[in-house]
Length: 164
Image (cartoon, rainbow, N blue to C red):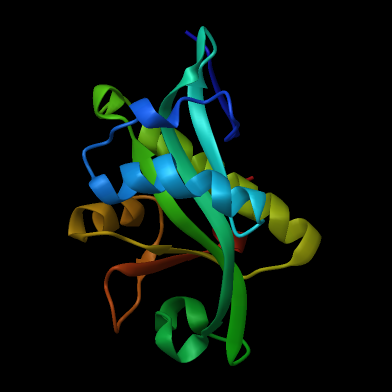
């Protein structure tokens, strides 16, 4: 099997996607295309090349408003201006039938790579995540994200530390 990560398109069957979290399912099914058409965010899906309409998982990335360095973890906020720009990994989900097979990691690495690539063109200090719960926060921490002291569900990784 070969897999591709591509921008969300009309041919992708969003209605059949279910990851077990209604909020994420509803976003993909009702909002992702609207946000994409208005350039609010960009959603990418992973599909099996043999069944390109079936979504295995997805992530959504967007520009983040300036973030005050005083709210950020001290370990990554050193020597920064008062407010820093970045990107938000707004959503990441894998279908229930594909969970536990490494697709979440693949999608996260793809999102990090895309953020790093965008930074080369327009700048941006960090990739931020607003995790949905402690389990999600733990997932991101395994890949180098650091929690904000004021809210452990907000995490960031300096883009300069992303490999590639």
